[in-house]
Length: 548
Image (cartoon, rainbow, N blue to C red; front, top):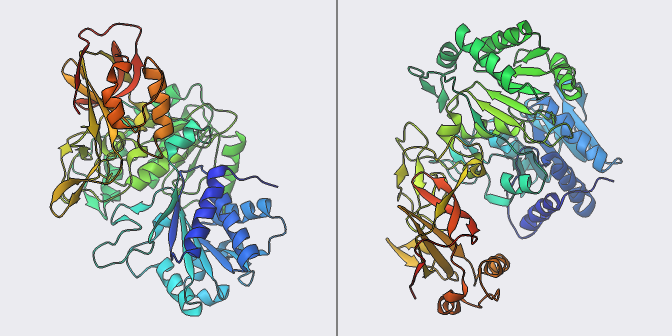
């Protein structure tokens, strides 16, 4: 019997609770490699066994159909399931639990009968518009079973052209009403469920001057013409081979079909077993290449448009991105191909030959909300007005101090804080402490045209002056969720080790707090945040100010 991880069980419970409480269509968001297929399988099992529901899981490629069916078989060997997919030669639409390819059923949805629940894998492929294969299927199923529920599973709950899947876009209503469960990539890496990524931005850059934009991303014809040049390709292949000398399985994302074939030929000329996979590759041959990659008989897979979603090759430990993209989702999906854990690797090395890292920022800070109209150049960054933390403009609240932002109130920093794949990739540095001050901090929000304090409990704000920079840290002493963390911090950083009960009490007892001689901080543009305190050296100017 397969045992689910705690977050997988929690995501299933969250969806079932959401539906039981009257919710309609919800999203589960898990990073690539987080086990969405097993979550879908457990949802199907419980829906059938506990509620007698007839469930359909639809997706867009045959590999995902077979992967999802295989996960249910492993979880529940006696499951009453069938597959409807013309490319696989299977047409069992009557089974209580059915896995189907959307291309095979959307024009004739009656083949799957009545369904109480529709699960959609890779839900980010849905359009906000009423037209489209999934929308057509949903409309039909809802007519047959009014109140039918939809559950989406994805690692990237947004579309570049229209923003988040749970937000309306123009006159088009969002299909999903909200995210019922989400797990962050950073937390999963910290817990050992995903492999760390070690960023590397190549000095070999692709000149994108003159490349037009079509449908929200670079024009395919222009892109291939700009990237697919013999001298550039040779430099890229040389660099990949050098960087991958101690790595076993490489994925290379090309900018066009011809580009993919040209890169493959160069790898082969260098004596490597390399294969090319594009939309033109026969399905049987594509499956063979993927199987060979998993068992280590080939070293390089070069692809175009077929390796960004659903590809499960856990031993991938190097990703070479030779495809510039304006799509946040595509960028996250490409990097996600290397985050699965495998006994043969400690981490994954993404090589960025484009400006994707700088354009989009760390992938754990992207939530896919639409950028401000007219924004150009590097992805805009936002400066929090409270703590001055700098982060991707797509976030609606500061990840450091939880300050929420009013719509339209944007302050930009022109460039990402570093060419980092994850926000934790930015190298920390040490700074001497010149002065310390303490104050009460309350979360604020925009109400009726002005900023006001919320009813959230206050936190203790500690501000360190380090030369020309100011670094702040927040201790959530009165927060129910953050109290345990605050107590741990106080015990480590105070003389007595006894945490105060409130911020007011803390402000009366700041003498109990030790003053560090220096701080380790992560630089965010011209601002910083604390990552470590060093009490082994004395502060240069241990002046203390207390604001009550």
